[in-house]
Image 1 (cartoon, rainbow, N blue to C red):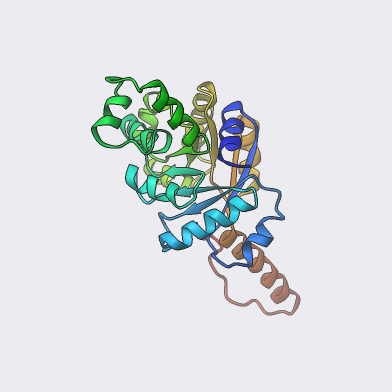
Image 2 (spheres, helix red, strand yellow):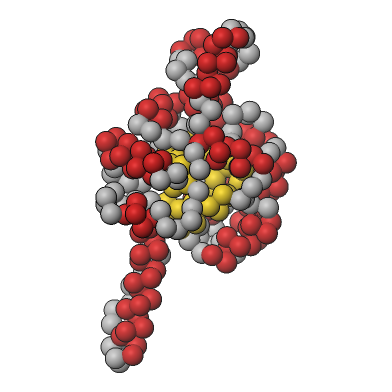
Length: 269
């Protein structure tokens, strides 16, 4: 998929598959290209990747027809434009709690390169765009998707207002942060968390916005797909590596009577 195909699929409720990629190894895209995915999630909130690395990742995966979507470190329109300039087909905005944040990021993603007062007037509806400019911006930004992270109680309380912003293509839940905000850290089967997830799914799809949860466990993904989620953002390269090798070494040690050291299998990426 490219960004335009990604937007159409998400809004239409079609299922989209992706995973988070942390490794910048030049060998890795060849492996990822065999996973039958639609997009990749490239994170700059929790990783030390510089702009050059992120741009390399974006352009490499785009060449493989895997839409690269970059999570920026903060709800900052200028950082969004930087990632798009580097080759991102979409932006994931962390910890959105106000509709005004979504509106400002929508301006950066959907109306760039407009900035400043001219952009503000367009977003506020105070000054209509000239037909030629409107057409130019629509064509220029047709390949750019906007994802927002809903991951807190304040975001849930303002969810209707946030989802009314017209530029949002997908809601991606941050489950670890959301459980912490709910006061039930990592209790993904807790009724409060499940109620929040089902509310987000229902309201997002009612607004023709794609929705999914970035999570490491397949049984939860299946449950949420059945509830209506269509963005299947599952696991990451580092998490899958950790789980697979941990299980295999446990098998080897058990078969050779070597209990070994028990390690934490939960890698929070």
